Every structure is written in C-alpha cells, then in structure tokens.
Image 1: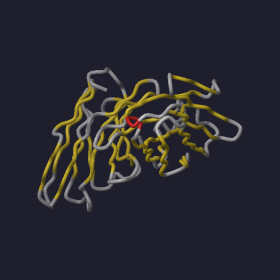
Image 2: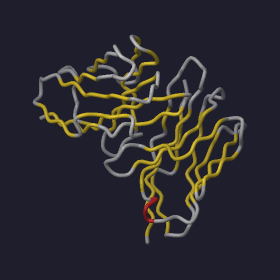
Image 3: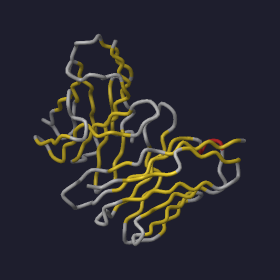
Image 4: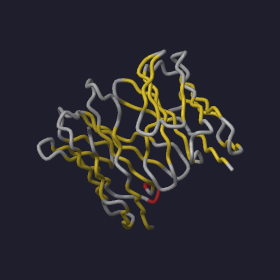
Length: 114
Length: 110
C-alpha cells in the first residue's frame, strides 16, 4: 500500500524567510496530494492541494510542487509570518482507485520566530 | 469546514464505560471518516464509510465501532475494549477527494 514520508519533522525559520516541507510517496498510482495546516488544539485545515496532471500550484504565499517521476511533492511558504506557525501534514491518495483513503505523513512542526 | 460538527468538544468517562462521539455533516458528502490523534502525533484512520449502510475498518479499528444509517451522520463508539482511549478524535467528510475535518472531540478516560 501507499506510504508517505515527510521531512523535516520540525522546522524553525525567521519571520520573512521561506519554509519548505518535503514529502515522498511510494505508490505511483497516487494522483491527489493535499496539504493541511493544524494549529494547536484545532482541526486540520486544507490549505492547498495538487493533482497529478499539474506540476505546480500557487495560492498567494503558498505553493506546492509535484515531481511524479521522483514521487515527491513539496510545500513552499514564502515571506513567513508568526501566524504560519503550526503543524503541517502532507497526504497522498489514489483517487478513483480501490484504496480510497488519504495516507498522511507524520507532520512537520513549523515555528516562525518574530 | 463549518458544515461538519462534532459533539461534545470535551468528554470525560470512567474506564470500562462505552462512549459515543457524534459527527454530523450538512455538506451532502458521501464519504465520512474517523481519525485518532495522540499528542504530537499524526492522524490514524479508525473507520471510514464511502456510502450509507456501508463502512470499512481503517488501520486501528480494534475497540471501536461505527454506524452509517444516514448520509449526514457517522457516530463512533469507543468501547471498553479500547486499551488507550484518551485522545483527540477527528471526523471528516469528503467529496471528489477533498477531505474536510470537523472541530474534534477530546476524550479523556480515567
């Protein structure tokens, strides 16, 4: 089955710097890759997602890139702000396949220092 | 996200008691899920349901049970057989692969 590895587990940056979180997946049939942000004690919130028919997607300060050949995808946050501090989870899914569940990475705790 | 509700927000139970966590959605989503999250940990899938009257076990189903009698509702029962039930429980629903989470229920069993 699918396995998703996420790195790093913790990341500390200065306000205004960029942050990059990377995930690799094992199942080449996976075709949907969302990213979630979870603030302390709150629900995970979908912040951006990408499907396998595109290589990059951007939404303001957040972007996701996908390399299907290497089976990895990354979250890029530019001009980080203290409110970006949270745990970020990546996930992968073979949408339309027999396994209909998101497989999550273990999360990255991002700290943005003012 | 506002269309998925979980109640209560906090729940306290004595060991040996069964407890049922509520999850309701008004988004007309077919699929619903239950996850467990322990402190500093990721999300582990307990049960999921792709359609009414059907559900499947996830990775950690032992000690839990669910029902899916209505599209809008997917309650989770934590039974006394669950050895370490204290955790944060998250319900989710999805449409066309996009999955949205409820606010969660924090269960404490003593």
